[in-house]
Length: 166
Image (cartoon, rainbow, N blue to C red; front, top):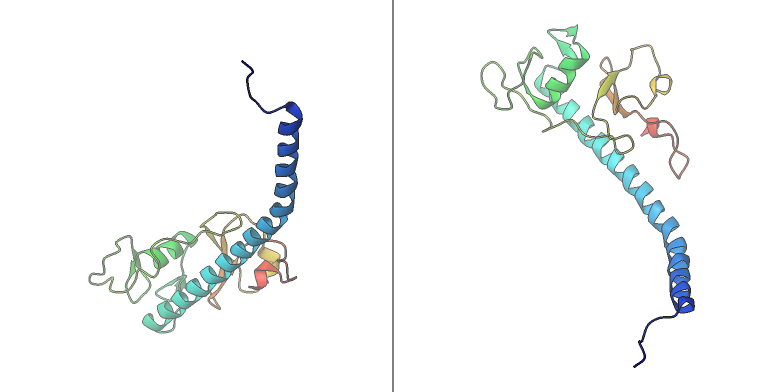
């Protein structure tokens, strides 16, 4: 009785064909991953910028990053997005509005930067340009004086636009 099996040549041929197909498909797949990251970054920025505008409307035109008109520490900024707020900008860790913390939360949790997976935010000084602050060490950059929120990512996308300019 003779055993039936694939020969070594047949196995090598099938593996070679699969390798060629993978080499053809990978660049296409990688392009879609890059496009998905760009889309995720732009959508997150749009959402955060909308929430900053809502915050300003509810706090007499004062953007996040301030408590009673004075600059707040960076740790408070995260709470101003995810907790509840008093009209002065004082933050509570609670997500259920109650007197005097009647506003917020503006986001359930801080979003992840799709490139470095960080949720942290760094302040950019009023006189500094965003381009000079980009270093990938945090997820996001925020300039409280102008309420500008940007991605902290070096480099450019496939269309030649700098990530920091999104």
